[in-house]
Amino acid sequence: EVQLVESGGGLVQPGESLRLSCMASGFIFKSYEMNWVRQAPGKGLEWVAYISGGGSNIIYADSVRDRFTISRDNVKNSLFLQMNSLRAEDTAVYFCARDVSLGVLDHWGQGTLVTVSS
Amino acid sequence: DIQMTQSPSTLSASIGDRVTITCRASQFTSTWVAWFQQKPGKAPKLLIYKASTLQTGVPLRFSGSGSETEFTLTISGLQPDDFATYYCQQYNSYPFTFGGGTKVEIK
Image 1 (tube, chains in turn yellow, brown):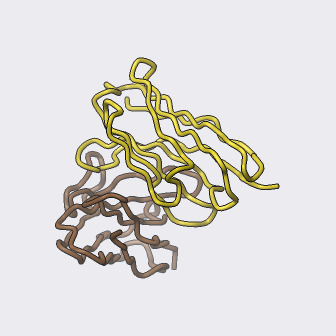
Image 2 (cartoon, chains in turn yellow, orange):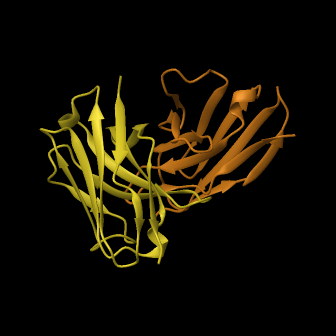
């Protein structure tokens, strides 16, 4: 069974950093592209970042480029999102999502809440 | 970026109703569109991909259609478990973008 479990969320002040993790199981992690998608409280879904299976290709949303870094460890079956210079508008539940093929996000984790507030 | 305009934002319906949700893309997206269902406090669940392909395990009352810039999600015979929020998403190009969501409520 495919499982994605996020962790690392919490309450931080504006300007601080946080690192999210997504532990994958039930599939050959290195064979799949992965994404982060976020959802602000009461709002819709916003795609954040993409990373290829080997980690060499990376794409970011304009809203997080130069502040967030996506990475992965294919030995530890883990996906990461390093978030720096956090802003109030980054407050959201962050989901990791598996790309099964050409952008189809077929499995999602349960999400981890990041709150940026002073 | 491709904007996805979804309508309606809220929909009131009864058990057994046929429900249609529409999504319009600001640019050509071929059939690279997916539909998700999300319940409160849960992750989105993939229902449809490539505009009309039903994800494994999704009930046959869900169907998708459309191409280029106009897409629809239809629920034929609304069930109690279907009351949720639905999102369209284009994956024709990055950045992937989602519609604003349609909340299906009990009438």
